[in-house]
View 1 (cartoon, one colour):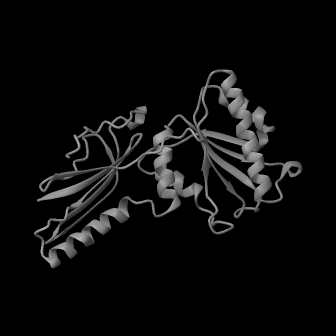
View 2 (cartoon, helix red, strand yellow):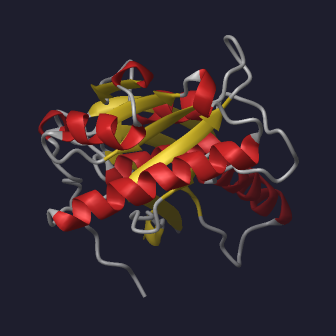
View 3 (cartoon, rainbow, N blue to C red):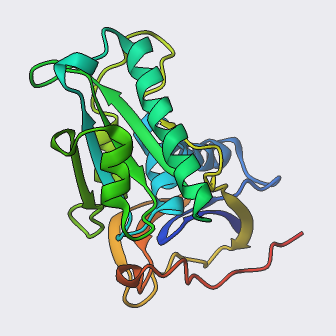
Length: 249
């Protein structure tokens, strides 16, 4: 007998799930029971909502000292619609990319456009990689210090990539198919790793890791286990420290 194990590593964030693997000798009842557990596991790790995919991109590309910025507009430059808002924020990131290229630094970013809460004014939230003295450069390229808020992103058990992603996706779409967020083309995009493991395999969270979510379902047909955690040393910007297992052919 064996199980399937699926792992997604996104910077310091690791998601692991284990669920029963089918066996040709299983009876119809056993196959149905395993399929149900497998479906539950897949639903947990699949990106059903926009924020679930976004949290992995945030974790894979940014760390605690990177920047959370909010950009607003004065009345003179206030967009009239989403198209104008899109042009405004894209122009800002083009200028910022050019400025960083001139000093030999790269730019990674993810942003969202909002206008449905507060006084309804168009505004922008973004996460960008920090390079040092970013405040003056951002203010200069945006145009006004009064319309820029900058702080380091927070990553702990209460506030982390999950809560940040949910905040950036909090507004409903203006139209079907509209993206809730956009990012630079150079973002690292985590991909799941899937392997067969022995039937007695369980998920063991590394000592010192910070568990964000976990669940376990045990039935007569097997066990489904799911864990989401920050690896030990995430406070210092450490990447994943999970021991790697060789894939079984």
